[in-house]
Length: 195
Length: 195
DNA sequence: GACTATACGGAACGCACGCTCCGGTTGTCC
DNA sequence: GGACAACCGGAGCGTGCGTTCCGTATAGTC
Image: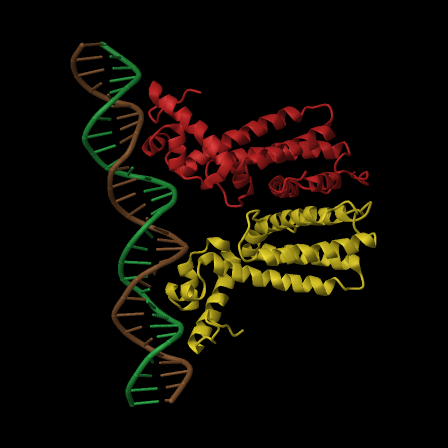
């Protein structure tokens, strides 16, 4: 993706190249370690000095937001596609599972979705995320697949809880069966026996 | 509680008093802010210099462990009492709710229970905690109140997930209804409608 | 009241990390 | 190919925090 500087002009070729490298390194390291990773590590991984990062992003948090925003945007895109699927039930549960798994392997998403305090830039992306999540939920509820007394706020909370559990299960090398329990609990009524 | 120094002798009166003050301040601040609170803050709150803390605890983490261990020990004690209650079902669910609520208001417990990496000293306390949790679970399962296909590891994961959700609900000023959903899901079969 | 081991406070050290600054380099345009 | 603007690397600054050190104060003992 080509980028423009603050005067609206195209970036010089080397600047664009370095910017891409920084973003790639940041994606990798933020995913692995979350916001806690030192900026110098990102610079080293990108083969770049720390100053170069600040040429492109005013602050470490801005870089983090850029990375997270893009990831969330991709998830929102997936949700929009699923929102038109034939089977609202499967769309809902597939998406839930998908987000849990993705966030479980991306510590940056955990940090971003989990924080109740707001990020400056990714806020709008998160609002989008809540919107599409609500849309998937509503459709699944209307067709009777999901309990009608679950709100979007509760769903998001359940999502974050499941992410926590999934990470925990992964750390303990066991399959996250307890998440199935919760998925079944969200269904309309009497879930079938679990195993 | 009177304490002895490393040679087994009783502490001097002022040392004992300061130690108590440090512990009290640490309990307060760790509960509010978790492990992240600066040690100098604890010292100031205790009306003591930083050096004094190090006279009693070799490291900040040791102080944290002391605080958390005591809190966990109290929870273990509660569980042991409940393990002999007449109604295993109520004992189980009461305890679950109680732990969730307590951890929700004590960030130090979140940090300790939530971390998959091990603490050096509180480890044994946590093992105790797993043991009593398992005992409560088993009794509730044997009397048919709780699904038989839930393991202790899964229960603990559910517990931590619920703590996450409870904190989130509290931050959003709503009642954590999604936790009731999970509690009902743990019951043997068809839960009654939620509201 | 004097003596000594014990304990205290707080200044200071070391380190990690976010961020800035500047002398040198490189792309771009004519 | 030369000139200029854009860009780069990395040394270094400021800050916050865990931890240590040492001159001073005080509890316990005779």
